[in-house]
Length: 305
Image (tube, rainbow, N blue to C red; front, side, top):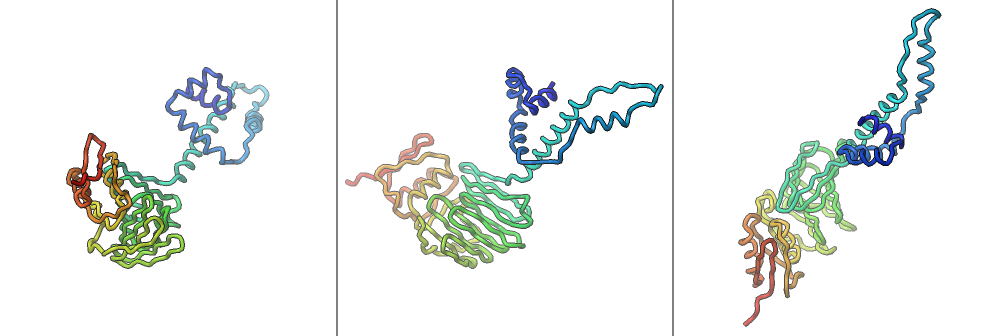
């Protein structure tokens, strides 16, 4: 019955009742996606009736011979062809779509690429690449923040909305979130291209752009990996808005403010494992009061006596 419905659906012969029944099946969505992908595919023409006529002529018995009546196979040949087409389109669809990795709130994830390069994704980040074309172009797309340990080989490129980072066998960190683009090289050498800016970074150096303006990158931290890989978020003269966004991202809370200048710059750090201490690390230097109600966090200016 399932094959009958599939064949009739492929030929547009389902009655309204049969179509409703077919659409309720769990495999219907898969068939539908495959059909959309197969619309762009083409194959050699095949005349089923002509093929059957050739088979009949070849099997015509000699006079007096025993005649064996064959069951019509046209319908099932059509079903077989449809199934082959569906699975061929499925393979094409699966093999060409990019590999995608996403981290949720308060989550980190390790990704190993086809060339054995290793990537650690920070919370709320998205990474994708084309596995099919990896041998000819080592390129990944990043939204958010990630630390890269790149295997030696051909040029490796990280593409972001704010700019591209090109490297050859190195370790580096890329942060690209709303209005902020920071690249820090920990080993080897990287090239950063952002708009009209092209910068070569040796180990220990960094490139920093905030709201489209290139700024001094700040001192080297002297470590072999960014602080967030050790569950600590660190900031050097970044807008308070970016700090609070990262706080919310690490602890899965909604942060609101009252009477607070979100453009003021913040330098400091907070633990990603203790929300109370993290909140104090932000509010105390800025002399802000705080209130926590479930997953709602409010920061507001203290009243002056």
